[in-house]
Image (tube, rainbow, N blue to C red):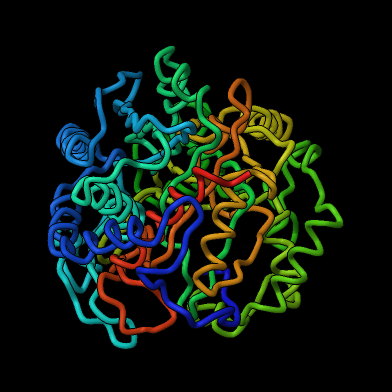
Length: 498
């Protein structure tokens, strides 16, 4: 939602426009099958959303994996199989169209947790809802992150089959079921010999996403921050002070508090402003913005709508009251130390007057290029030990390094071409402030360009009432069919981009 800006073009995708590598009748034949099978595509997405697949709760993962594999077979993939690892299994498949070029395709089949009490429509009902100023949307956990965009790409692949046309490129598919818990075992999946051999034949890797903002603008991210997800645990047992079981709170007068001990430890992780990372050595290797990246951000800022961004985020001020341009530079370049949640003692109705024996903080650290997850974790542990908190447990639950892809790579240039033919001048952005495990593709030994592509719009990832637009009333954004057509065009463009 941070990429908002002026509309660069009002033209929607037209089924008969020219795309490199495809003649008009061929393109029209594939596009028309998308329209004919609209209901089938929507029902497929509803079935997918109705199957919870929550890695954090180990809920529905076997069923979610099997369902994804069935969809892949239906879309024409061969040899679809599970790839075991130390966590949830991955999925590997290939689609050999006999084409000269091959590209990798990344999916995730897990979703975030959802509390039904926070939703206006049950999170696993996949209800079709009329949303003012948008049109018909599907509401459900995973609707936009990522089952909606992924189902849209599958609809594009199905259209080739219905039209009796071969894909213009071969595909190597790899998926994981642990993206939402920091992809702790995805590297194991990709480094399986069979998977690695197939990926070495690829010219790049892409992930489907609904990239359109509400005003129709599209961003192309040339990378993403890395992330470390972890929890800090303070306990009387480990500390050797404080209680080993909850006590009556009157004893706080004479017994140390593990909860306050955790708060004091947390307070050392940021500066006096409560924001700037202060972990010793944590950001020493953080690469500053290059002049080219600063120019990219400056140009993008002129096309973005600051008020719309603040409104969608529900904020009134940027940190330190910086201006919009500096806020965008911070978003791209600043490593972060974020508290996701704090739990300790009693948090139910009324009071319980206890001195808790244990308190936990869940954190995520966002990393910029030249930082690594391993070094960030080591810096945190050393920092706590140096400041008399060696007893605080540091449990990393997931994470990975940052990723970068050159602007002149095929996956980026093909995306730019397709967007521009749709009348959209995309915003080039140095890196996504969020994270995805693209490092397994962009780093050694593969060193492949990797990014995201897709028209369409959704919102509410990780939040209540997550949605994905199915039938758009907003002329600036595409519904599911238009997004599927964009994927058809992208595949054709990948086949010929030089």
